[in-house]
Length: 242
Image (cartoon, rainbow, N blue to C red; front, side, top):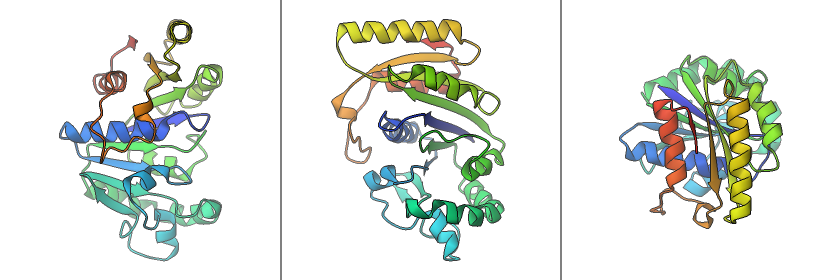
Protein backbone atom coordinates (compact mmCIF):
# COMPACT_ATOMS: atom_id res chain seq x y z
CA UNK A 1 0.00 0.00 0.00
CA UNK A 2 1.14 3.53 -0.79
CA UNK A 3 -0.34 6.97 -0.21
CA UNK A 4 -0.30 9.98 -2.52
CA UNK A 5 -0.92 13.26 -0.72
CA UNK A 6 -2.17 16.15 -2.85
CA UNK A 7 -1.19 19.27 -0.92
CA UNK A 8 -1.19 23.05 -1.25
CA UNK A 9 -1.06 26.32 0.67
CA UNK A 10 -4.04 27.92 -1.04
CA UNK A 11 -7.47 26.92 -2.25
CA UNK A 12 -8.74 26.79 -5.79
CA UNK A 13 -5.57 25.47 -7.40
CA UNK A 14 -6.76 22.00 -8.35
CA UNK A 15 -6.19 19.67 -5.39
CA UNK A 16 -9.54 17.93 -5.79
CA UNK A 17 -9.22 17.68 -9.57
CA UNK A 18 -5.74 16.13 -9.33
CA UNK A 19 -6.83 13.76 -6.55
CA UNK A 20 -9.87 12.50 -8.46
CA UNK A 21 -7.85 12.18 -11.66
CA UNK A 22 -5.10 10.16 -9.98
CA UNK A 23 -7.65 7.93 -8.26
CA UNK A 24 -9.45 7.23 -11.54
CA UNK A 25 -6.27 6.58 -13.54
CA UNK A 26 -4.91 4.18 -10.93
CA UNK A 27 -8.24 2.36 -10.89
CA UNK A 28 -8.12 2.02 -14.68
CA UNK A 29 -4.62 0.55 -14.27
CA UNK A 30 -6.14 -2.23 -12.17
CA UNK A 31 -5.19 -0.80 -8.78
CA UNK A 32 -7.46 -0.85 -5.76
CA UNK A 33 -7.83 2.77 -4.64
CA UNK A 34 -9.24 4.63 -1.65
CA UNK A 35 -9.91 8.34 -2.17
CA UNK A 36 -9.98 10.24 1.14
CA UNK A 37 -11.74 13.59 1.02
CA UNK A 38 -10.03 15.75 3.64
CA UNK A 39 -11.58 18.95 2.30
CA UNK A 40 -13.73 20.53 4.99
CA UNK A 41 -16.56 21.10 2.51
CA UNK A 42 -16.22 17.59 1.00
CA UNK A 43 -16.17 18.96 -2.54
CA UNK A 44 -14.76 15.75 -4.04
CA UNK A 45 -17.51 13.68 -2.43
CA UNK A 46 -20.08 16.17 -3.71
CA UNK A 47 -18.78 15.68 -7.26
CA UNK A 48 -18.87 11.89 -6.88
CA UNK A 49 -22.35 11.84 -5.37
CA UNK A 50 -21.41 10.79 -1.82
CA UNK A 51 -23.95 12.76 0.22
CA UNK A 52 -24.01 10.59 3.33
CA UNK A 53 -22.36 11.17 6.71
CA UNK A 54 -18.65 11.84 7.17
CA UNK A 55 -16.45 9.63 9.34
CA UNK A 56 -16.33 12.13 12.20
CA UNK A 57 -20.11 12.34 12.50
CA UNK A 58 -20.32 8.58 12.10
CA UNK A 59 -18.06 8.20 15.13
CA UNK A 60 -19.95 10.87 17.05
CA UNK A 61 -23.20 8.93 16.53
CA UNK A 62 -21.47 5.73 17.64
CA UNK A 63 -22.19 4.04 14.31
CA UNK A 64 -20.02 1.21 12.92
CA UNK A 65 -16.82 2.49 11.29
CA UNK A 66 -17.29 3.10 7.54
CA UNK A 67 -20.96 2.12 7.69
CA UNK A 68 -21.97 5.41 6.06
CA UNK A 69 -18.78 7.40 5.49
CA UNK A 70 -17.28 4.94 2.99
CA UNK A 71 -18.87 4.27 -0.40
CA UNK A 72 -17.83 2.25 -3.42
CA UNK A 73 -18.37 4.59 -6.36
CA UNK A 74 -17.23 3.78 -9.88
CA UNK A 75 -14.85 1.11 -8.54
CA UNK A 76 -13.29 3.56 -6.05
CA UNK A 77 -13.50 3.50 -2.28
CA UNK A 78 -14.60 7.03 -1.38
CA UNK A 79 -14.10 8.04 2.26
CA UNK A 80 -15.77 11.23 3.43
CA UNK A 81 -14.37 12.76 6.62
CA UNK A 82 -16.53 15.79 7.32
CA UNK A 83 -20.29 16.20 7.31
CA UNK A 84 -20.25 19.69 8.80
CA UNK A 85 -17.10 21.84 8.62
CA UNK A 86 -18.28 23.80 11.67
CA UNK A 87 -17.96 20.70 13.86
CA UNK A 88 -14.40 19.75 12.96
CA UNK A 89 -12.72 20.68 16.25
CA UNK A 90 -15.46 19.03 18.28
CA UNK A 91 -15.10 15.71 16.49
CA UNK A 92 -11.32 15.40 16.24
CA UNK A 93 -10.82 14.04 19.79
CA UNK A 94 -13.41 11.38 19.01
CA UNK A 95 -11.43 10.27 15.97
CA UNK A 96 -8.20 10.04 17.96
CA UNK A 97 -9.86 7.50 20.24
CA UNK A 98 -10.92 5.38 17.26
CA UNK A 99 -7.64 5.31 15.32
CA UNK A 100 -7.03 1.55 15.82
CA UNK A 101 -10.50 0.67 14.54
CA UNK A 102 -10.22 3.03 11.56
CA UNK A 103 -6.79 1.63 10.67
CA UNK A 104 -8.10 -1.90 10.82
CA UNK A 105 -11.04 -0.96 8.60
CA UNK A 106 -8.68 0.54 6.01
CA UNK A 107 -6.35 -2.46 6.07
CA UNK A 108 -9.25 -4.88 5.59
CA UNK A 109 -9.98 -3.27 2.20
CA UNK A 110 -6.48 -4.26 0.98
CA UNK A 111 -6.13 -1.16 -1.18
CA UNK A 112 -3.05 -0.53 -3.29
CA UNK A 113 -3.21 3.27 -3.10
CA UNK A 114 -4.68 5.90 -0.83
CA UNK A 115 -5.22 9.29 -2.46
CA UNK A 116 -5.51 12.10 0.09
CA UNK A 117 -7.35 15.17 -1.19
CA UNK A 118 -6.14 17.55 1.51
CA UNK A 119 -7.54 20.70 3.02
CA UNK A 120 -5.50 23.88 2.60
CA UNK A 121 -2.18 24.01 4.44
CA UNK A 122 -2.50 20.91 6.61
CA UNK A 123 0.68 19.97 8.47
CA UNK A 124 2.07 16.54 9.30
CA UNK A 125 2.32 17.15 13.04
CA UNK A 126 -0.95 18.86 13.94
CA UNK A 127 -3.65 16.95 12.11
CA UNK A 128 -5.27 13.80 13.46
CA UNK A 129 -5.93 12.43 9.96
CA UNK A 130 -2.21 12.75 9.22
CA UNK A 131 -1.47 10.97 12.48
CA UNK A 132 -3.82 8.19 11.42
CA UNK A 133 -2.10 7.74 8.05
CA UNK A 134 1.33 7.84 9.70
CA UNK A 135 0.26 4.82 11.74
CA UNK A 136 -0.04 2.84 8.50
CA UNK A 137 3.76 3.01 8.03
CA UNK A 138 3.52 3.01 4.23
CA UNK A 139 5.34 4.81 1.44
CA UNK A 140 4.03 8.34 0.97
CA UNK A 141 4.44 10.61 -2.04
CA UNK A 142 3.48 14.27 -2.16
CA UNK A 143 2.18 16.43 -4.99
CA UNK A 144 2.58 20.08 -3.98
CA UNK A 145 0.28 22.23 -6.07
CA UNK A 146 1.06 25.87 -6.67
CA UNK A 147 0.26 28.65 -9.07
CA UNK A 148 2.87 31.08 -10.36
CA UNK A 149 2.27 33.49 -7.47
CA UNK A 150 2.61 31.03 -4.60
CA UNK A 151 5.75 29.08 -5.51
CA UNK A 152 7.87 30.54 -2.70
CA UNK A 153 5.17 29.78 -0.12
CA UNK A 154 4.85 26.27 -1.52
CA UNK A 155 8.59 25.68 -1.18
CA UNK A 156 8.44 26.71 2.49
CA UNK A 157 5.41 24.48 2.96
CA UNK A 158 7.10 21.47 1.34
CA UNK A 159 10.05 21.84 3.71
CA UNK A 160 7.67 21.18 6.61
CA UNK A 161 6.95 17.76 5.07
CA UNK A 162 10.59 16.87 4.42
CA UNK A 163 10.74 14.09 7.01
CA UNK A 164 7.31 12.66 6.24
CA UNK A 165 7.31 12.40 2.46
CA UNK A 166 10.32 11.04 0.59
CA UNK A 167 9.21 11.68 -2.99
CA UNK A 168 7.87 15.16 -3.75
CA UNK A 169 6.61 16.78 -6.94
CA UNK A 170 6.15 20.51 -7.38
CA UNK A 171 3.37 21.31 -9.84
CA UNK A 172 2.88 24.84 -11.12
CA UNK A 173 -0.74 24.54 -12.14
CA UNK A 174 -3.32 26.56 -14.05
CA UNK A 175 -0.74 28.43 -16.12
CA UNK A 176 -2.52 30.48 -18.82
CA UNK A 177 -1.91 28.99 -22.31
CA UNK A 178 -0.08 32.11 -23.43
CA UNK A 179 3.55 31.75 -24.61
CA UNK A 180 4.88 34.42 -22.24
CA UNK A 181 3.16 32.86 -19.22
CA UNK A 182 4.27 29.35 -20.12
CA UNK A 183 7.86 30.51 -20.61
CA UNK A 184 7.83 32.25 -17.23
CA UNK A 185 6.37 29.18 -15.50
CA UNK A 186 8.96 26.89 -17.11
CA UNK A 187 11.71 29.27 -16.02
CA UNK A 188 10.42 29.18 -12.43
CA UNK A 189 10.17 25.37 -12.52
CA UNK A 190 13.76 25.16 -13.78
CA UNK A 191 15.00 27.39 -10.98
CA UNK A 192 13.17 25.40 -8.33
CA UNK A 193 14.35 22.06 -9.71
CA UNK A 194 17.97 23.22 -9.86
CA UNK A 195 18.03 25.06 -6.53
CA UNK A 196 15.88 22.67 -4.50
CA UNK A 197 16.71 19.29 -6.01
CA UNK A 198 17.10 17.80 -2.53
CA UNK A 199 13.53 18.85 -1.74
CA UNK A 200 11.68 18.16 -4.99
CA UNK A 201 12.26 15.11 -7.17
CA UNK A 202 10.26 16.62 -10.01
CA UNK A 203 8.96 20.01 -11.12
CA UNK A 204 6.19 20.08 -13.70
CA UNK A 205 4.24 22.90 -15.37
CA UNK A 206 0.56 22.29 -16.18
CA UNK A 207 -1.26 24.83 -18.30
CA UNK A 208 -4.89 25.71 -17.71
CA UNK A 209 -7.35 23.32 -19.36
CA UNK A 210 -11.04 24.15 -19.05
CA UNK A 211 -11.88 20.43 -19.32
CA UNK A 212 -10.29 19.99 -15.89
CA UNK A 213 -12.72 22.44 -14.31
CA UNK A 214 -15.10 20.45 -12.07
CA UNK A 215 -13.67 17.23 -13.53
CA UNK A 216 -15.90 14.26 -12.71
CA UNK A 217 -14.26 10.86 -13.26
CA UNK A 218 -17.63 9.11 -13.40
CA UNK A 219 -18.97 10.98 -16.42
CA UNK A 220 -15.83 12.32 -18.09
CA UNK A 221 -13.77 10.41 -20.65
CA UNK A 222 -10.78 12.67 -20.23
CA UNK A 223 -7.01 12.34 -20.25
CA UNK A 224 -4.38 14.95 -19.57
CA UNK A 225 -0.85 14.22 -20.73
CA UNK A 226 0.79 16.30 -18.01
CA UNK A 227 -1.25 14.75 -15.21
CA UNK A 228 -0.40 11.32 -16.60
CA UNK A 229 3.29 12.23 -16.54
CA UNK A 230 3.01 13.40 -12.92
CA UNK A 231 1.39 10.11 -11.94
CA UNK A 232 4.02 8.07 -13.79
CA UNK A 233 6.77 10.11 -12.13
CA UNK A 234 5.32 9.13 -8.76
CA UNK A 235 4.81 5.46 -9.62
CA UNK A 236 8.34 5.01 -10.98
CA UNK A 237 10.13 7.62 -8.81
CA UNK A 238 11.45 9.60 -11.76
CA UNK A 239 13.56 12.67 -11.17
CA UNK A 240 12.26 14.94 -13.87
CA UNK A 241 11.66 18.48 -15.09
CA UNK A 242 8.75 18.99 -17.49
